[in-house]
Amino acid sequence: MQNTEPFREKLLQLKKEMLEKMQAINADIKHEGMSADWEEQATERENDEVLESLGNASQQELAQINQALERIKDGEYFTCSQCGADIPASRLELLPYTNLCVECAEANEKQRKNNA
Image 1: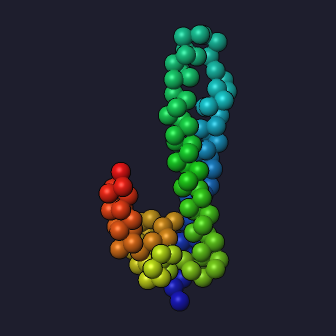
Image 2: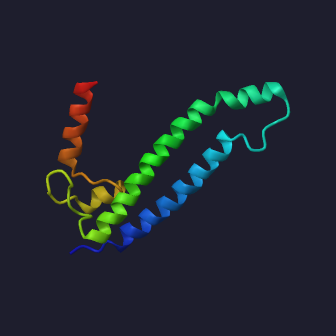
Image 3: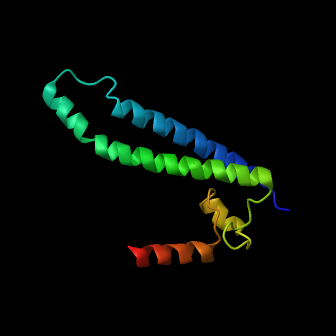
């Protein structure tokens, strides 16, 4: 059985960074410390859509990180959730929250592009 501790530590660090990022995005969306100048406020509000998009992406990534931590706990971290094949450690080093082997990830991406 492969050692999951380095991956768990990396995921916990990513989770911490993601939570900090989401906190900053939420503060920006709430316009904490917003300028008293109406023109500057208008400019600040124009960024809300971009911030919401970043927040949504961050929430999705956080969910993937939490799922990866659960897979470590369940002893399924190195197993593709789609086909059951092994996920290479080198892939997990690059994308520690992935739950798919390369073949399944490529097949899903191809299918997604065909459906678009």
